[in-house]
Length: 178
Image (tube, rainbow, N blue to C red; front, top):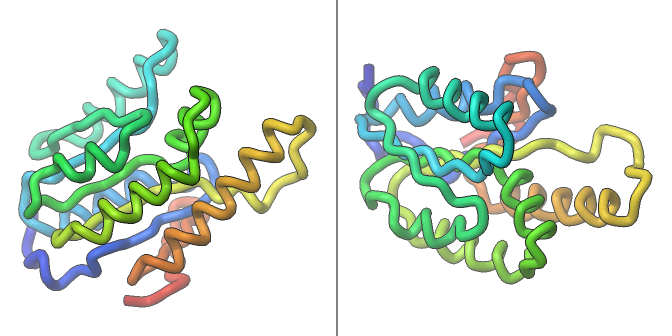
């Protein structure tokens, strides 16, 4: 399954797109281009039965060879604790940002911590995020604040990444080539 070495992939790949656009599946395929084990750092929280079922389904779909770490808040800490040689998929930044904002955490401080952790990585890291700037202006102040923070976060990560992919209907469109 894995044929390429770690050094053949960019260190940071940013995969962005709309909901259900194939971001996670594509990110996992990029990680699988390297030798297992692969690490999934999941930011979702199983707060209800439907979400617990979704999370269980995602774990089944990934299959064997994956180490799953849950990091709804301390994403930088989880990234630092991930095996140094293993490719990592972070899925997803917008859920993480939502968790931070709703939990009363400082998103700017958390993003700075994430950037420090990303700089320290020496194995491929694939970060998944939702594109929030293609829709209507949110109705509520919290919605607008989230959209603004998410847009800034996405811009920061896209600028830092060596490779950026925009997903549309399951199709990857390279925005920033390696």
